[in-house]
Amino acid sequence: MELILSIESSCDDSALALTDITTKKLVFHKKISQELEHSVYGGVVPELAARLHAEALPKILEECELYFKDIKAVAVTSTPGLAVTLVEGVTMAKAVALALDVPIIGVNHLVGHIYSLFIEQEAQFPLTVLLVSGGHTQVMEVQSLQEIKTVAKSMDDSFGESFDKVAKMMGLGYPGGPLIQELAKGGDRKKYNFTIPLSQSKEIAFSYSGLKNAVRLAVEKAEKEEYKDVAASFEHIAVAHLIQKLKKYFKEIPPSAFAIVGGASANLYLRQEIEKLLKPFDATILLSELKYCSDNAAMIGRVGIEMYKLGMFSSLADLDITPKSAL
Ligand code: KG4
Ligand code: ZN
Image 1 (cartoon, rainbow, N blue to C red):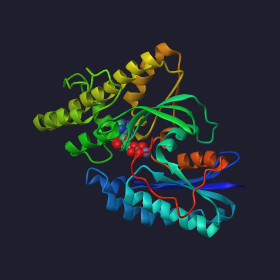
Image 2 (spheres, helix red, strand yellow):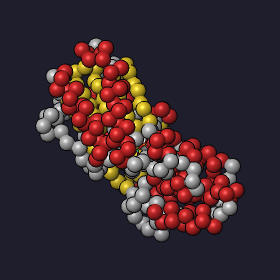
Image 3 (cartoon, helix red, strand yellow):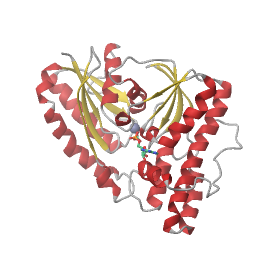
Protein backbone atom coordinates (compact mmCIF):
# COMPACT_ATOMS: atom_id res chain seq x y z
CA MET A 1 0.00 0.00 0.00
CA GLU A 2 1.31 3.46 -0.92
CA LEU A 3 -0.19 6.28 1.10
CA ILE A 4 -0.16 10.05 1.31
CA LEU A 5 -0.45 11.58 4.76
CA SER A 6 -2.29 14.90 4.53
CA ILE A 7 -2.58 17.64 7.13
CA GLU A 8 -5.01 20.57 7.35
CA SER A 9 -4.71 23.39 9.90
CA SER A 10 -5.47 26.59 7.96
CA CYS A 11 -8.20 27.79 10.32
CA ASP A 12 -10.09 26.07 13.13
CA ASP A 13 -10.10 22.41 12.10
CA SER A 14 -7.22 20.07 12.89
CA ALA A 15 -7.41 17.20 10.42
CA LEU A 16 -5.28 14.34 9.14
CA ALA A 17 -5.96 11.83 6.40
CA LEU A 18 -4.26 8.85 4.80
CA THR A 19 -5.15 8.25 1.16
CA ASP A 20 -4.12 5.38 -1.09
CA ILE A 21 -2.21 6.89 -4.00
CA THR A 22 -3.28 4.21 -6.50
CA THR A 23 -6.95 3.70 -5.64
CA LYS A 24 -7.64 7.20 -4.15
CA LYS A 25 -9.44 5.43 -1.27
CA LEU A 26 -9.36 7.07 2.11
CA VAL A 27 -7.73 4.75 4.61
CA PHE A 28 -8.01 7.12 7.56
CA HIS A 29 -9.58 10.53 8.16
CA LYS A 30 -10.02 12.37 11.40
CA LYS A 31 -10.89 15.95 12.17
CA ILE A 32 -11.02 17.73 15.51
CA SER A 33 -13.07 20.93 15.20
CA GLN A 34 -12.57 23.87 17.51
CA GLU A 35 -16.00 25.39 16.92
CA LEU A 36 -17.05 25.04 20.54
CA GLU A 37 -13.92 26.76 21.86
CA HIS A 38 -14.32 29.72 19.48
CA SER A 39 -18.08 29.93 19.82
CA VAL A 40 -18.01 32.10 22.95
CA TYR A 41 -15.95 34.70 21.03
CA GLY A 42 -18.28 34.71 18.00
CA GLY A 43 -15.36 33.96 15.67
CA VAL A 44 -11.97 32.28 15.41
CA VAL A 45 -9.30 33.58 17.80
CA PRO A 46 -6.01 32.83 15.96
CA GLU A 47 -3.77 32.26 19.00
CA LEU A 48 -6.30 29.98 20.65
CA ALA A 49 -6.67 28.09 17.35
CA ALA A 50 -2.89 27.63 17.11
CA ARG A 51 -2.68 26.27 20.66
CA LEU A 52 -5.52 23.82 20.00
CA HIS A 53 -3.84 22.62 16.77
CA ALA A 54 -0.62 22.04 18.71
CA GLU A 55 -2.58 19.70 21.01
CA ALA A 56 -4.81 18.01 18.44
CA LEU A 57 -2.48 17.35 15.49
CA PRO A 58 0.05 15.12 17.32
CA LYS A 59 -2.82 13.29 19.01
CA ILE A 60 -4.35 12.39 15.63
CA LEU A 61 -0.91 11.56 14.21
CA GLU A 62 -0.44 8.91 16.91
CA GLU A 63 -3.50 7.12 15.54
CA CYS A 64 -1.74 6.84 12.14
CA GLU A 65 1.36 5.15 13.54
CA LEU A 66 0.43 1.75 12.19
CA TYR A 67 0.60 3.15 8.65
CA PHE A 68 3.92 5.04 8.93
CA LYS A 69 5.74 2.39 6.90
CA ASP A 70 3.35 2.89 3.97
CA ILE A 71 3.57 6.70 3.78
CA LYS A 72 5.24 7.83 0.54
CA ALA A 73 4.73 11.62 0.91
CA VAL A 74 3.30 14.22 3.27
CA ALA A 75 0.87 16.82 1.84
CA VAL A 76 0.06 19.86 3.94
CA THR A 77 -2.00 23.03 3.54
CA SER A 78 0.56 25.80 3.21
CA THR A 79 -1.66 28.58 1.78
CA PRO A 80 -3.98 30.49 2.36
CA GLY A 81 -5.06 30.68 5.99
CA LEU A 82 -4.13 32.07 9.37
CA ALA A 83 -0.34 32.35 9.67
CA VAL A 84 -0.19 31.03 13.23
CA THR A 85 -2.31 27.97 12.45
CA LEU A 86 -0.77 27.12 9.03
CA VAL A 87 2.60 26.99 10.78
CA GLU A 88 1.37 24.25 13.13
CA GLY A 89 0.50 21.91 10.26
CA VAL A 90 3.56 22.74 8.17
CA THR A 91 5.93 22.24 11.10
CA MET A 92 4.45 18.85 11.87
CA ALA A 93 4.52 17.90 8.17
CA LYS A 94 8.21 18.76 7.96
CA ALA A 95 9.01 16.73 11.07
CA VAL A 96 7.17 13.66 9.72
CA ALA A 97 8.68 14.00 6.24
CA LEU A 98 12.15 14.23 7.74
CA ALA A 99 11.62 11.30 10.09
CA LEU A 100 10.17 9.05 7.37
CA ASP A 101 12.51 10.36 4.68
CA VAL A 102 9.68 11.09 2.23
CA PRO A 103 8.95 14.19 0.11
CA ILE A 104 6.72 17.04 1.24
CA ILE A 105 3.98 18.68 -0.85
CA GLY A 106 2.58 22.16 -0.11
CA VAL A 107 -1.12 22.27 -0.99
CA ASN A 108 -3.27 25.32 -1.71
CA HIS A 109 -6.36 25.08 0.52
CA LEU A 110 -8.61 26.53 -2.21
CA VAL A 111 -7.49 23.85 -4.66
CA GLY A 112 -8.29 21.44 -1.85
CA HIS A 113 -11.87 22.70 -1.77
CA ILE A 114 -12.13 22.12 -5.54
CA TYR A 115 -10.89 18.54 -5.13
CA SER A 116 -13.34 17.95 -2.26
CA LEU A 117 -15.66 17.13 -5.18
CA PHE A 118 -13.47 14.21 -6.20
CA ILE A 119 -12.67 12.35 -2.99
CA GLU A 120 -12.19 8.66 -3.84
CA GLN A 121 -13.02 9.55 -7.47
CA GLU A 122 -11.46 10.66 -10.74
CA ALA A 123 -11.49 14.42 -11.27
CA GLN A 124 -13.64 15.88 -14.07
CA PHE A 125 -12.75 19.08 -15.87
CA PRO A 126 -13.44 21.63 -17.30
CA LEU A 127 -15.51 23.00 -14.47
CA THR A 128 -16.84 26.36 -13.34
CA VAL A 129 -16.54 26.50 -9.56
CA LEU A 130 -18.15 28.79 -7.00
CA LEU A 131 -16.12 28.67 -3.79
CA VAL A 132 -18.00 29.99 -0.76
CA SER A 133 -16.20 29.64 2.55
CA GLY A 134 -15.34 31.63 5.63
CA GLY A 135 -12.32 33.16 3.94
CA HIS A 136 -13.32 33.27 0.26
CA THR A 137 -16.06 33.96 -2.24
CA GLN A 138 -14.85 33.40 -5.74
CA VAL A 139 -15.70 31.97 -9.12
CA MET A 140 -13.02 29.94 -10.86
CA GLU A 141 -12.66 28.37 -14.28
CA VAL A 142 -10.81 25.10 -13.79
CA GLN A 143 -9.22 23.26 -16.72
CA SER A 144 -6.85 21.12 -14.68
CA LEU A 145 -4.88 21.14 -11.44
CA GLN A 146 -2.48 23.67 -12.89
CA GLU A 147 -4.92 25.76 -14.90
CA ILE A 148 -7.21 27.52 -12.47
CA LYS A 149 -8.35 31.03 -13.33
CA THR A 150 -10.23 33.21 -10.84
CA VAL A 151 -12.85 35.19 -12.74
CA ALA A 152 -14.65 36.90 -9.84
CA LYS A 153 -13.99 37.43 -6.16
CA SER A 154 -15.18 39.37 -3.16
CA MET A 155 -13.94 42.91 -2.68
CA ASP A 156 -14.37 42.69 1.09
CA ASP A 157 -16.08 40.15 3.40
CA SER A 158 -16.79 36.63 2.21
CA PHE A 159 -20.20 34.95 1.97
CA GLY A 160 -19.55 32.61 4.94
CA GLU A 161 -17.99 35.38 7.01
CA SER A 162 -21.11 37.53 6.58
CA PHE A 163 -23.17 34.69 8.11
CA ASP A 164 -20.66 34.47 10.97
CA LYS A 165 -20.88 38.22 11.59
CA VAL A 166 -24.67 38.34 11.49
CA ALA A 167 -24.83 35.41 13.93
CA LYS A 168 -22.42 37.24 16.21
CA MET A 169 -24.62 40.38 16.13
CA MET A 170 -27.55 38.25 17.23
CA GLY A 171 -25.47 36.55 19.93
CA LEU A 172 -26.03 33.13 18.35
CA GLY A 173 -22.45 31.79 18.44
CA TYR A 174 -20.03 30.45 15.83
CA PRO A 175 -19.98 29.27 13.06
CA GLY A 176 -22.86 31.43 11.94
CA GLY A 177 -23.77 29.66 8.70
CA PRO A 178 -25.69 26.69 10.09
CA LEU A 179 -27.17 28.84 12.91
CA ILE A 180 -28.52 31.50 10.56
CA GLN A 181 -29.78 28.84 8.14
CA GLU A 182 -31.71 27.18 10.96
CA LEU A 183 -33.13 30.46 12.31
CA ALA A 184 -34.07 31.63 8.81
CA LYS A 185 -36.25 28.53 8.28
CA GLY A 186 -39.00 30.01 10.41
CA GLY A 187 -38.61 33.56 9.10
CA ASP A 188 -40.05 35.76 6.37
CA ARG A 189 -37.51 36.30 3.55
CA LYS A 190 -39.35 39.41 2.32
CA LYS A 191 -39.80 41.14 5.69
CA TYR A 192 -36.66 43.27 5.44
CA ASN A 193 -35.90 44.90 2.14
CA PHE A 194 -32.10 44.77 2.15
CA THR A 195 -30.45 45.97 -1.05
CA ILE A 196 -28.68 43.42 -3.25
CA PRO A 197 -24.99 44.44 -3.24
CA LEU A 198 -23.41 45.79 -6.47
CA SER A 199 -26.64 45.33 -8.40
CA GLN A 200 -26.03 48.50 -10.42
CA SER A 201 -22.45 47.55 -11.22
CA LYS A 202 -21.56 45.77 -14.45
CA GLU A 203 -18.54 44.24 -12.79
CA ILE A 204 -18.69 40.58 -11.85
CA ALA A 205 -17.48 40.79 -8.27
CA PHE A 206 -18.92 40.29 -4.80
CA SER A 207 -19.26 42.46 -1.72
CA TYR A 208 -20.79 41.63 1.65
CA SER A 209 -19.72 44.44 3.95
CA GLY A 210 -22.56 46.82 2.97
CA LEU A 211 -25.17 44.12 3.49
CA LYS A 212 -23.61 43.26 6.86
CA ASN A 213 -23.90 46.89 7.96
CA ALA A 214 -27.53 47.12 6.81
CA VAL A 215 -28.29 43.96 8.77
CA ARG A 216 -26.54 45.39 11.83
CA LEU A 217 -28.94 48.37 11.81
CA ALA A 218 -31.92 46.02 11.49
CA VAL A 219 -30.68 43.81 14.33
CA GLU A 220 -30.25 46.85 16.59
CA LYS A 221 -33.87 47.88 16.01
CA ALA A 222 -35.42 44.42 16.05
CA GLU A 223 -36.96 42.58 18.98
CA LYS A 224 -35.55 39.09 19.62
CA GLU A 225 -38.68 37.47 18.10
CA GLU A 226 -37.98 39.33 14.86
CA TYR A 227 -34.43 37.95 14.47
CA LYS A 228 -35.74 35.04 12.43
CA ASP A 229 -37.13 37.47 9.83
CA VAL A 230 -33.85 39.42 9.78
CA ALA A 231 -31.97 36.12 9.31
CA ALA A 232 -34.29 34.96 6.52
CA SER A 233 -34.16 38.31 4.70
CA PHE A 234 -30.38 38.44 5.06
CA GLU A 235 -29.92 34.89 3.75
CA HIS A 236 -32.25 35.70 0.85
CA ILE A 237 -30.23 38.77 -0.22
CA ALA A 238 -26.84 37.16 0.43
CA VAL A 239 -27.83 34.35 -1.95
CA ALA A 240 -29.59 36.70 -4.41
CA HIS A 241 -26.31 38.59 -4.79
CA LEU A 242 -24.45 35.43 -5.82
CA ILE A 243 -27.24 34.41 -8.19
CA GLN A 244 -27.45 37.85 -9.82
CA LYS A 245 -23.72 37.98 -10.53
CA LEU A 246 -23.59 34.38 -11.74
CA LYS A 247 -26.50 35.06 -14.08
CA LYS A 248 -24.56 37.95 -15.57
CA TYR A 249 -21.45 35.79 -15.89
CA PHE A 250 -23.35 32.91 -17.51
CA LYS A 251 -24.60 35.35 -20.19
CA GLU A 252 -20.96 35.73 -21.25
CA ILE A 253 -19.83 32.18 -20.55
CA PRO A 254 -22.61 29.61 -20.26
CA PRO A 255 -21.66 26.81 -17.86
CA SER A 256 -21.40 23.19 -18.96
CA ALA A 257 -20.43 21.80 -15.58
CA PHE A 258 -20.82 23.85 -12.41
CA ALA A 259 -19.79 23.13 -8.83
CA ILE A 260 -20.27 24.81 -5.46
CA VAL A 261 -17.57 24.08 -2.89
CA GLY A 262 -16.43 25.36 0.52
CA GLY A 263 -18.01 25.32 3.97
CA ALA A 264 -20.91 27.55 2.94
CA SER A 265 -21.79 25.31 -0.01
CA ALA A 266 -23.69 23.33 2.61
CA ASN A 267 -26.30 26.12 2.61
CA LEU A 268 -29.56 24.57 1.43
CA TYR A 269 -31.18 27.77 0.20
CA LEU A 270 -28.06 28.51 -1.90
CA ARG A 271 -28.10 24.98 -3.34
CA GLN A 272 -31.77 25.33 -4.23
CA GLU A 273 -31.34 28.72 -5.92
CA ILE A 274 -28.27 27.55 -7.87
CA GLU A 275 -30.24 24.56 -9.13
CA LYS A 276 -32.98 26.93 -10.36
CA LEU A 277 -30.40 29.18 -12.01
CA LEU A 278 -28.80 26.26 -13.85
CA LYS A 279 -32.07 24.74 -15.15
CA PRO A 280 -32.07 26.55 -18.52
CA PHE A 281 -28.45 25.60 -19.22
CA ASP A 282 -28.42 21.80 -19.35
CA ALA A 283 -25.37 21.98 -17.09
CA THR A 284 -24.31 19.28 -14.65
CA ILE A 285 -24.10 20.31 -11.00
CA LEU A 286 -21.38 18.91 -8.79
CA LEU A 287 -21.51 19.15 -5.01
CA SER A 288 -19.18 17.76 -2.38
CA GLU A 289 -20.53 15.34 0.17
CA LEU A 290 -21.68 17.41 3.17
CA LYS A 291 -18.88 16.04 5.37
CA TYR A 292 -16.29 17.31 2.87
CA CYS A 293 -17.77 20.81 2.34
CA SER A 294 -16.11 22.27 5.43
CA ASP A 295 -12.36 22.13 5.99
CA ASN A 296 -10.91 18.63 6.05
CA ALA A 297 -7.72 16.72 5.29
CA ALA A 298 -9.27 14.30 2.78
CA MET A 299 -9.43 17.10 0.18
CA ILE A 300 -5.79 18.02 0.86
CA GLY A 301 -4.80 14.38 0.38
CA ARG A 302 -6.78 14.21 -2.86
CA VAL A 303 -4.79 17.17 -4.26
CA GLY A 304 -1.66 15.57 -2.78
CA ILE A 305 -2.14 12.52 -5.02
CA GLU A 306 -2.26 14.69 -8.16
CA MET A 307 0.81 16.68 -7.10
CA TYR A 308 2.67 13.50 -6.13
CA LYS A 309 2.08 12.04 -9.58
CA LEU A 310 3.38 15.23 -11.18
CA GLY A 311 6.43 15.31 -8.90
CA MET A 312 5.38 18.68 -7.43
CA PHE A 313 7.46 18.43 -4.26
CA SER A 314 8.97 21.15 -2.09
CA SER A 315 12.25 21.01 -0.27
CA LEU A 316 11.97 20.99 3.50
CA ALA A 317 13.94 24.23 3.68
CA ASP A 318 11.83 26.04 1.07
CA LEU A 319 8.29 25.08 2.00
CA ASP A 320 6.88 28.14 3.70
CA ILE A 321 3.43 29.34 4.64
CA THR A 322 1.66 32.04 2.60
CA PRO A 323 -1.35 33.40 4.52
CA LYS A 324 -2.77 35.28 1.49
CA SER A 325 -4.42 33.44 -1.36
CA ALA A 326 -2.45 32.87 -4.52
CA LEU A 327 -5.51 32.01 -6.64
O1 KG4 B 1 -14.60 26.05 4.14
P1 KG4 B 1 -14.78 26.35 5.58
O2 KG4 B 1 -14.97 25.19 6.53
O3 KG4 B 1 -13.60 27.19 6.14
C1 KG4 B 1 -12.90 28.13 5.38
O4 KG4 B 1 -12.08 27.72 4.53
O5 KG4 B 1 -13.20 29.33 5.58
O6 KG4 B 1 -16.03 27.34 5.68
C2 KG4 B 1 -16.51 27.79 6.90
C3 KG4 B 1 -17.56 28.85 6.64
C4 KG4 B 1 -18.00 29.59 7.89
O7 KG4 B 1 -18.01 30.98 7.62
C5 KG4 B 1 -19.41 29.06 8.11
O8 KG4 B 1 -20.28 29.97 8.77
C6 KG4 B 1 -19.86 28.83 6.68
O9 KG4 B 1 -18.73 28.26 6.06
N1 KG4 B 1 -21.02 27.91 6.60
C7 KG4 B 1 -22.22 28.28 6.12
C8 KG4 B 1 -23.07 27.13 6.29
N2 KG4 B 1 -22.33 26.12 6.84
C9 KG4 B 1 -21.06 26.62 7.02
N3 KG4 B 1 -22.66 29.43 5.60
C10 KG4 B 1 -23.94 29.49 5.23
N4 KG4 B 1 -24.82 28.47 5.36
C11 KG4 B 1 -24.42 27.28 5.88
N5 KG4 B 1 -25.30 26.27 6.01
ZN1 ZN C 1 -11.83 26.13 3.72
